[in-house]
Image (cartoon, rainbow, N blue to C red; front, top):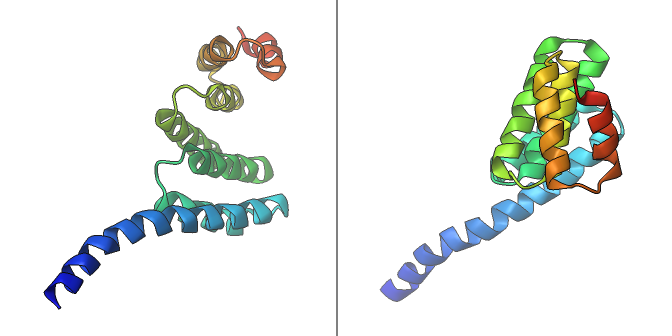
Length: 144
């Protein structure tokens, strides 16, 4: 009987480690559905749930940034733009080798009026992914 309890206690953290990321992926997919339908407050809840259940996935943080940016575009509230920048910085901190996060952060800095930072981040995106046409085009627009 004691061996059963020892095994159960050892397996519970293992199951939690497997189930939480699966649940986060499910929440993330629901968030995408609501984001596509432009229901940003609902998609925010699902993205936040995904991020809380798997805080090491940079895509979840990046989608939170996208959600805040969409809110900024509809409300023109600078707080939403600042939150978008913060979540994109968090996504970048989780994956420093993905040019997408640098490019997205460059555009966010451009919208917030920080042209030097926009130039710096788009340069880094192009440095990482030299042949991406979108980054090269953005480089031409964002370099000051």
